[in-house]
Length: 277
Image (tube, rainbow, N blue to C red; front, top):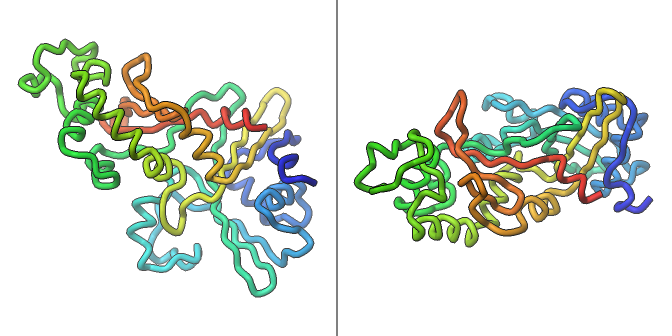
């Protein structure tokens, strides 16, 4: 079967959670979906000796690193850049060759909307991407970490729509342009960090599962992470109609709510990936 024909499928039953998908990979010899996923990843089923899937927790202790084939010197990078969403680590053995694939799982209902892919303080993003202090201050005004009223000398005659924070389109035009220009020039690293991550637990693949409760079926699509980054990160970097901003199909906005109301978050609509069917 051609790899392009394998990209997505609808299957009976529900397997949208991490535990179920690990179970399917661990039953690869008898499970048709996991065999298709392995084929998409480029493996010949008849040449595989073993496949072991492990659910990666949000928090990993140093003592558990060996379980994931990770060296201790990678720990700090791993904790900082591991994707916070559920991941499955697949250890594949072919002869004397050990292959490891990291899967980022996005699960959604048929009517699902946004899914957060990364959330940090503005300072954390400044350390990662190196934007200057001026952008840092205005992004903090955007997230509400800094209150516009307290910074009235900077914000001048701006009358915010929300007294807790500023929207990008309320900022001086030169600041709007500076923020948008930064994310245009640094799009590759930004998109990579928020979708793929860095280090031993960066994602190689994204599996989106969409469960239909009424029909009791799960539709899935599995794509390599470069295709995913091009799909979601391609397109214009522009200010959104509501005063946040877009990097292609990625929305950047103030977190709001609890916890972490003043963090900067990036969101995607995972189900959009089905457009690549």
